[in-house]
Length: 521
Ligand code: SAM
Ligand code: SF4
Image 1 (cartoon, rainbow, N blue to C red):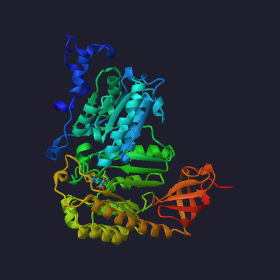
Image 2 (image 1 turned 180 degrees about the horizontal axis):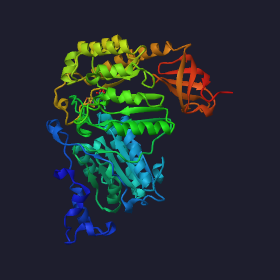
Image 3 (image 1 turned 60 degrees about the horizontal axis):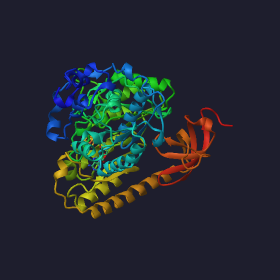
Image 4 (image 1 turned 90 degrees about the horizontal axis):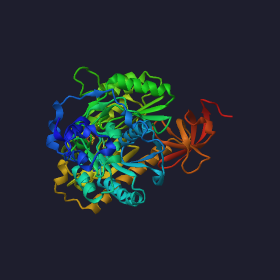
C-alpha cells in the first residue's frame, strides 16, 4: 500500500503531538493536530502512464461492510441530501451512499435548507459538468454561513483529480469533506471526521479499486433498478478521463450479480440495467474462471424479470457469443446503445478506439442479422482535435448508414491528464458548434422518422408514473426505451401494458391504453 492509499488503521496508527496515540482519544477530544495527518492524505493526478501499468495488482472482494457501532445512530433527527451529476454509475453510487446514510439513522431530504449533510456527487467527463459543480459549491457558501454545522462534501469523479481538489482546498474552504470514487465505503468514518475536525477532510485513494459487495442501497424506485456488473475501465480512449477516475477494470463475481438480480425480481422490479463503463468487457479480468458478458446475459436471461438492459458496451468487446445470446430475446431487449464516437477510421485510430469504421459497420450488420428489428443508439464526439470537415462527413454518413434512432452527442472537451488534452487543435469552437448542430439535426430527423413508424402500432409499455407535465397522463417506456404518454388508471403504475400509438413526436409517443396485466375498467 502506498502513502496515498492510507487506510483507517494507518490514519490512526501514528502518535499525536501530545505523545498520546490519537487512536486512544474519543473523537470529540481530538485536536486539529490529531487530525492533521488525515489532511495529508494525498491523491495522485490522473497519469496515463501510471494507470497503464496497473494490471498486476490483485482485486479484493469484500463482503464485510458494516457501519461502525459509534456511527449507527449519529444521523438520528438529521437529514442528508445528495446532488448527482453525470452518468448512471453516479446515480447508482448515490443510491449506495443514500443507503449508508439511512443505516446511520439519517433521513433523506430534497430541501437544502433542512439538510445536515449535503454531498455533491460529481462528474468529470466534460468541462461543463465541472463548471456546474463549481457553481453549486459557490451557492452553498451562503447556506454554510447560516448553518455552520452543515457538512458539505464533494465526491465522485471530480474528486479524483488533483487540480479539482487543490482548487476546492484553496478557494472553497466552506467544503468540509472531499472523497473519491474508491472511498464510498468509508463514508461513515469520513462523516465522523468531518463532524469533529476543524479543517477540511480529504480522502482520495488513487488505488485501483476493490469491490465492496454488501454495501446498503436505497434504490430510487421500485420498478427499475441499476445493477453494477463491473467497475473501472482499461480501454484508455485518448479523450477520456474515466480510466483515471474510476480505476482499473474489475468485474463482480457472477454469483453476486445473479443473486442481486434474482432478489430484485423477487421484490417485484420489472427492469434492471446492467452498468459498467465498458459493460461488455465484463469477465475479461477473471483469472480463475472463463465467464464473459455473453455468459452473464445467458444466465440472467433465465431469471423471471421482464426487462434487462445494459449500458454502455464497447464495439470492440461485442463478441459473437454475446450477439447469439441476445438473439434469444425474451427479457434481453432488442435495443442496443453502442457508442461509436466517430465515423472516420483515422479519428477512431487517434482516439484509440481499437476499431475502424468498417469494423463497426460489420458489427452492426451482424447484430441486425441476428436480432431482427433491433434499434441502435449511440454516443458521438464532434470536433475531436484537428477533425476535418471530410472526417466529420464520415460521421454523418455512418449515422445514416446505421440508422441510429437517438444519440448522445458532445463537443470534444479536453480533460487534463488524458493524452489528447495537450494536443494542438486547429478546429475553432464555432466550427465545432456548427458540426454539432448539423449532427443533431440529422439525429432528430432519424428519430422523428423512427417515431412516425410506430403510429397505429401497439407497443408494450412499462408504466413508470404520472407524466411530468400532466398528472392526469401516465408515462412509461417501450422495450426500445421510447417514452409513451397515455391516459390510464394509476393502479397500473409498475405494470407492463399494451398501448396503441396514436401520435408521434421527435422524442416521445402518445397513445391509448389497450390492455393491462391488472385489468382496466
Ligand atoms: N464507455 C463508453 C464507451 O466506450 O463509449 C462511454 C462512457 S463515457 C462515460 C460517456 C460518453 O461521454 C462517451 O461515449 C463519449 O461520447 C463522451 N465523452 C467522454 N469523454 C469526453 C470528452 N473528453 N469530451 C467529450 N465527450 C466525451
Ligand atoms: Fe472512456 Fe468508454 Fe473509452 Fe473507457 S471505453 S476510456 S469509459 S470512452
